[in-house]
Length: 562
Image 1 (cartoon, one colour):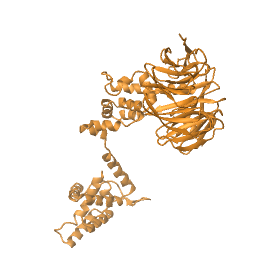
Image 2 (cartoon, helix red, strand yellow; image 1 turned 180 degrees about the horizontal axis):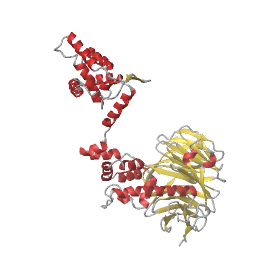
Image 3 (cartoon, helix red, strand yellow; image 1 turned 90 degrees about the vertical axis):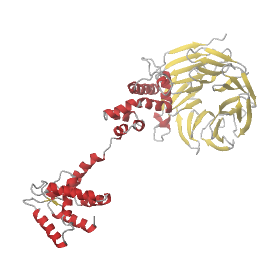
Image 4 (cartoon, helix red, strand yellow; image 1 turned 45 degrees about the horizontal axis):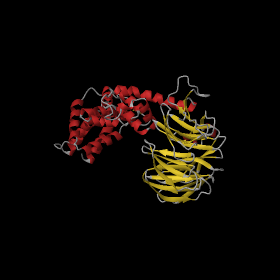
């Protein structure tokens, strides 16, 4: 379409009554009506004078009759929206469409843009209403029709539970895609893979066997998983409420040590609890029946620290030695003699072990196998007993009675920085990612950013030395010489705007002596004490009449040595 001709068309469009092109039922009709104005003067069989006369004649014939003109505030002057009954509208419309179809796509777009720019607000609204449904696409319904069900399922599999519920209500086809794609099952599987709480519930409530592949030949329909999801959410909310309110069932193991009393350290899994005692022994307990399965002897001093995996138990003692035991048989595989005084703490992972001692040193060991353990490096820098160590691939972190926390490079064993802030010796810490949480004999807990050494928060509440501490993504759990276990809100503690009074969620009081060690997960706390007991605080299996305050009903097992 030639530019000069297009300009004349637009000018002619503006000079004719709007009833011809604005009263059309669609934008296509409007365009066709306007195009007919351009078609007459463009006939090449007539000369320029004849074309001008015909155009003038057309305008005269289409001149408005009894048309009331209304001036809009923000638009051009418009008249009646009724299409004139006389004239050859249908014929002219078809002729305009035929011309429009002959143009290139670029010319069509350019013409429509010019045309829309001359229209008023009402016309723009009409065009928008006409185009909107044309631009919408139900791709979830369209994909299966093309044999691409798996793509539709994959798209919907990224939805959360609330969005998935809404998607099921869109139409029957969407519901079919969700049902046949087992998307509720996939959502639950994704949560089990990424959230320890979901994983723990799946194991304890026995619905893990219906997840993933090759777990069972019996696969329930999608409706089973749809109804299972809200039950899981209800269980999670109940567990969280039990933690906040302190509702729990309590199980108690009475160790009944023969000589000196006290359980200094422990670790547990779903089947067993392994504890190190003041009477020089290591006791292995059945976690379900609370019966003592095995007693390991060999140390000549109190067992102060331990850690185990699927193959070995490694223990440190006040006799200054580190011993390696076979888990299943209890046989001593190795004895490491290096430290000059009591081995106070140890950690091992991925072929590396770190031990610390009352002799103020830290030893870094390479563990090729349980019987092949060699000393790599000795770290010296603390001015008092090194009470605790922790490490990952980047840093080794140690805490001492000299009031400091020191950070060392794991790969080079070089000193990195010192964290200062505690006013008395530090008894415990845990390190993960950038966060270090420490407990001290100044009765406080401190949170640190290991990268910059800044103290992020000080937690106050214990009345005596904070002896043990653990944290996960939600909580900090601490035990102290005041016999109390406190549960803290970790996320609130990391928020500088949170008031200090809101940080301690619950104080648990059951031990009658100093709390030496604790470990916890999403469902329970297991703690040991100078009172010669191991307590299991169960926040999952709470009796209906469980009380949020006071002492909980307990089941006690007493170990009597033979």
